Length: 204
Image (cartoon, rainbow, N blue to C red; front, side, top):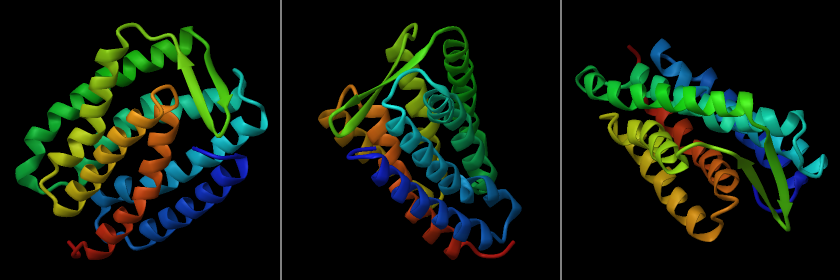
């Protein structure tokens, strides 16, 4: 995220609190993975505060941050959407799920065999991983995460997907090198929308 370790820590704690509230209000078992997403994103921001404190580099905090941001989210989001989506939308959601699984496998392999490095750039953090065919992996990642939300067939999740997509465009235009860091922070802040979605969900 932008600014500092303190900003990441405060934002992470706040988003994690939203996640706790989301999980506490779940009335459908299938909603639990998505309801817990703010918890994961909040923890992710807290991990990045440790990256700040370490001055970047290739340490454990950097690796944990990359594992959550790249392979884990590429699977977590489409699985969560598939579990929560209305029955009529589930078949088409198998496409972003399959893309997410393939993308996550490639990203996990890259993180296992090549170092990931964080670099403090003023008030942002840039992350560097040597990826084969990065454009293809980024496209697969966005299809798995944003695409599954937009195809969910649920108004609240579609709104969340639109906000995250807009955030992706804005953060990429502003910070191409620091894109992943700032976009993940934006997605975490958008998790407040998930709290509203959980609150409006009818009981099964």
